[in-house]
Image (cartoon, rainbow, N blue to C red; front, side, top):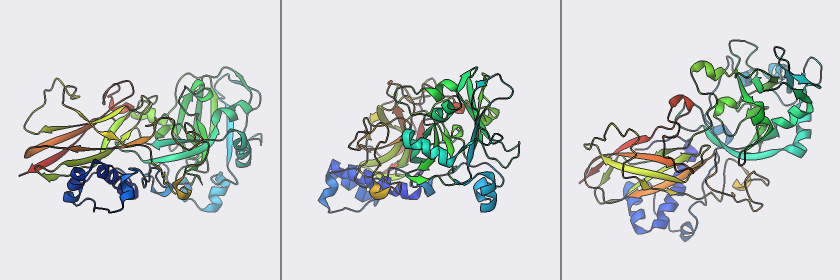
Length: 420
């Protein structure tokens, strides 16, 4: 009866916030939901005033879904070994060095060999002046659903790079984490030096991340420090970070490139179902809810289309551009953010938020947004239901980048039977 791309707790909270939205629609919406048995009627009139009061928008750190590499996984090693390898805050060190195969000019490399690698105490000293916090959904290039929505905190990588006093011949930044000192397990990624040193308007800096939802980053989440690239898929946000290498090589070195992946693809916008019934009685409004994954081009609308299964769609329109799409309601930002934050409140100084704690615009790029709609007047029969996003440029999913290896954004379909 339901598709559940979120953690069980976040799924239930999504049902709660959309229940409140449907209650605002009045008796028709309530009838639909109570007929489904999805929600019970709540007599508390305060529910009518705020459709997002109890939305747990952020994923608690221990409920993130995980994509992992390493045998054994580094954070599962005994504490003594983790301390030896620098996988705990008190022994962590990061080197920032020139590529020995390149002609980078750098005055003050930070290296373990020289004994001046950046330690966690040094990182926290930089954090006193440069720390940033921002929202980001973590998602994988080759997975159809997000892994979790988080508030991330760290120090911009550029602030550390500038301490090494680089002067010339730098085109790219290579970085990798601890993977058991086994070359076959090494996981690495890279970025243009220009993206590291300068942020396009509305984008967040590349950070050395040490906190998630206000808590120290656990080993399972890539701690003590991981790379965090807000506009990219998860493979750029390398876990258990230990080395940053500046190079004059113009080529990327990403592990993901070996799997026929587009390693320079920013996140895409796409819609996904969360709740949708499999059967419904004729004359009953159909409650549909979901989430939108907001990519680099933002989000202006979410749309839903229902089509009889016996009405075959023309093959020359595979993206359903001529279908009768209906706008769904994009729900407003939550008043309680969840994620195990104290009282569900965001801390101060979250990027792109006002001093009163409100987002400057909504939905925000590189996050998720919840949506809901009611489909009415559907005659008996079997139907397919589709959902899609329209980005801030007015382009409908799966365009403008429909290629699978540059991230998922196929139009999702579900089916329903309307009974007499």
